[in-house]
Length: 230
Image (cartoon, rainbow, N blue to C red; front, side, top):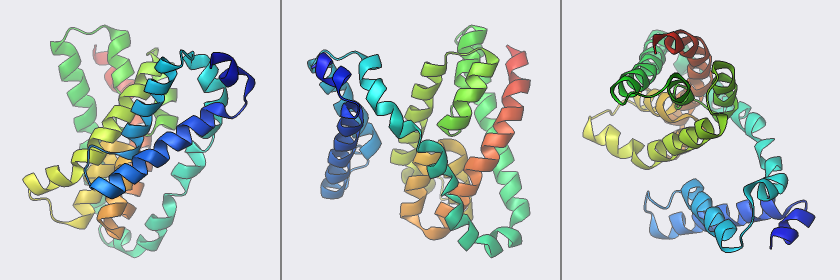
């Protein structure tokens, strides 16, 4: 199987897409948050690679083409934002305050937990970009001297957890305002969380899309500052 993946230019892409499709069908059938398509795809892909004894580098040689779509897919999230632009203008102060507070909370949480767990500086900066989209987070981690591959894993885990529990957390803390829900989900769980926000409603999805871009920019600045603290 290792030779098959090595000789096939698109075996990795095919495995990834099939795994994601299975995840979508499971989510559609059972309506359970744990069957998040991305989470299911990750688990199935890992199981197949382990069972077939395929090296990650060999798999990634074909699967890497999917990552090229990450940036344009993120840019496309501006469409729902454009559709709700008047709502954004009417609530711009609350929007800015919500995103800023979310970014500071994320960075401060990583700092406090890293300090309590006595993590090294390299491990600490690896975790700082956990709540922003992968395309930006990888660059921050590399610039600050973190483990980029671990940063990617942490970002994905953060997004999946946010996608699964976002609606439940909003109910627990009685967050009913669509703008507040969207800002919270997008700032905390980036693009993966935004997929859930879009399921909840158009306004939630638009505000979450906005949060991805703004939170990413603020985190680039904030991470550089917080990196000096530990």
